[in-house]
Image 1: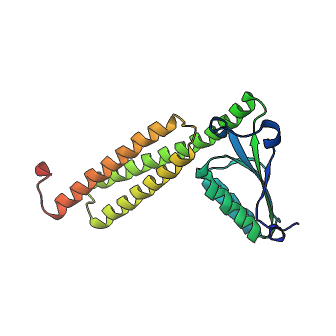
Image 2: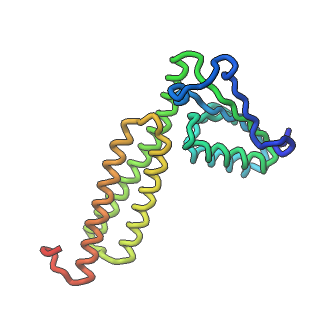
Image 3: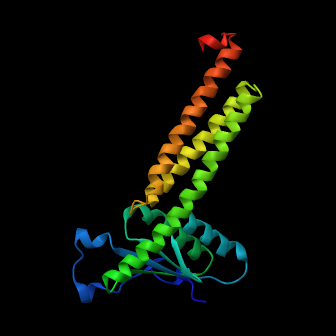
Length: 211
């Protein structure tokens, strides 16, 4: 297999539409995509898994064996670069193509596929928010008001916040689930604040009616 390290750069940039369509305007840019074609040896499998995880983390859309796509926007640049670097270190080959749909229907189809992936991400996020709220409610129900438990709940909330930030950055077309997820995260924050007040009240012997 041809190694990326044998060429001047780790990424071969091929603009498949520039000669045909000319310069890209700001309006067109949002409907353009980066297509990644990555080839790696079957073994050791950790290299393939590493690239797969990086692209999944970046929000890339899987189009088939070793073929991925992301909108051609700055928010995805870091993930693409890291995936290409991983392929290079694994003595593989990574090709990045700039592409645009030949018709509005093509662009709409890609956008729909990308949004479906984001909706799946949000569904997972919302499920974790529900688990978090249920966990806090359980601790209140059994009156487990300890600093150790509060710290654990605060750490879990911070993870949800970071996750929400990452998903929001990827959701460049704005799926409806993003609004629901933001509202649910606010509920989680409120639940954590309520639990913190209860812990503070118990530790400082504040009567429940005064908390």
